[in-house]
Image (tube, rainbow, N blue to C red; front, side, top):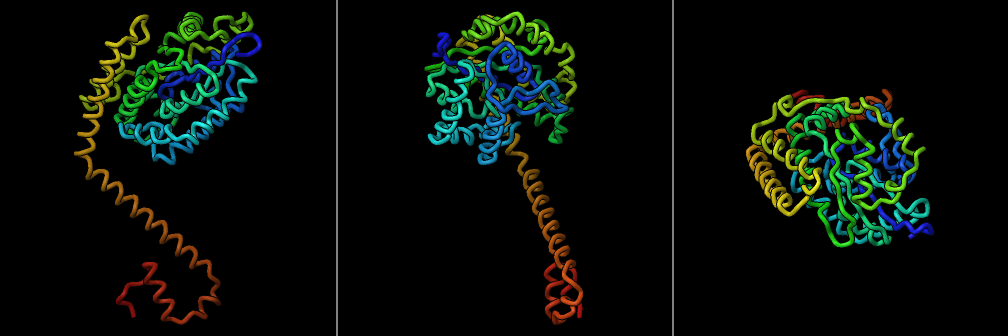
Amino acid sequence: MNPDGVPRKVLFVAGAGRSGTSTLAGIVSKLGMHVPLPEVPPDDSNPRGFSEPQWVVDVHDEWLREALVQVSDSRPNAWFETGRICSREPARIRVSEWLEPHFDQHPELVIKDPRLSWFLGLWRVAAIRTGATPVFATMLRPPAEVVGSKQKYYANKLGSAHLAASWVNMLLHTERATRPAEGDGGRVFVRYEDLLTDWVKTTTALGHSLGLQTIIHTRSDQIREVHRFIDPHLRRVTSTLDDLALPKRLHDLTAETWEQLNDLADEGGDNAHAHATFDQLREAYVELYEEAEAISRSTAEHARLQARRRATAEAAAESRSLADRVPHDVRAAIPPSVRRAARKALGRERDDQP
């Protein structure tokens, strides 16, 4: 606890990228919670800022590269790959040691990053080791809007089906990862629409539900600052699942997942019956993905061969470029037989040439 008697807490804002996580993290930070510095700077995709600690983004990128997992990865097995990193003691120590000094700035921290869900188990352990209570807020935005926003601002070339599948994968496993565990202080699910429509009511309910003293006892000047921060036009992409033209089974599973997640945001909706439903949805998604993976091996193999051909062509082009940089007088001093052998190796002369 700090001298004012406010116990340590860490609010983890989870969910898919482009689902309103930056908006929620920005609101609670302006109400007094602390985003560890330095923050990721704003850009054209999010001109009001991300409210993300740069260190968190960097360490998550490092771990995702090691695990060969993408930020928007649709593979159910990707969770096993990142889970291996979550179980490492050195990684837990590293995060705990990073968290500890930030409590000197404020007893209630907010950690947000679209990559966060992949490592929630690690962050939960690290927070508890610092004497803090972990609490979770998962942002909910219609999947078609998330997909459309990613396509608009991130120039994603993998297609709507991939992005919808990655949304299902992310949200189903985030729901599982944030279920109550020993040492936790609770979780909430927040609709992006509710946040934009009435942020005061939505954020106040979040603060009371999670026992965040900074939110419960906020000041009027901070409230005015959030009013200036919230832009009614933040919801710049609106579309429906029908607009995405998804394969039918993926369309139906995405729609069902969204419907069930919406129920979690209602009072009393986060219960054992809902948890069982989500377990069934995860099993259905794994089954769907495994079927799709099994019948698309030829596509994967073709992509691998194309990548290898491109790499070979690029290496040959680089070799030719290096050879062309050799001065003429140096090349002239090389015996003709050696030059011919070199040209053959680079594919610049056929074997049957004299």
